[in-house]
Image (cartoon, rainbow, N blue to C red; front, side, top):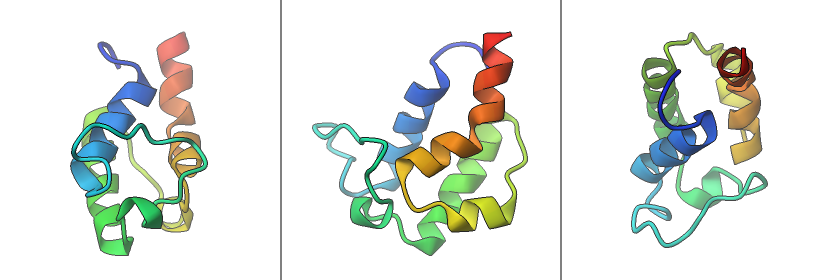
Length: 86
């Protein structure tokens, strides 16, 4: 992926899916729980679809379903981060 870093692109996606982050004043932290950010299971599926499109990857449904924090989403994106470092 070129352009913004994987982390920054994920933050942008989180802002578009989280009612708690939409105003842009709060910065999500890795240990923030997705549910506390207003991302329920249905919204997580939508976020996952946007992540797949943005990063041109396939995300395992089980991995996405078990994601509870922002850090969990970053773990899912580790292959993208490694690819960008090459």
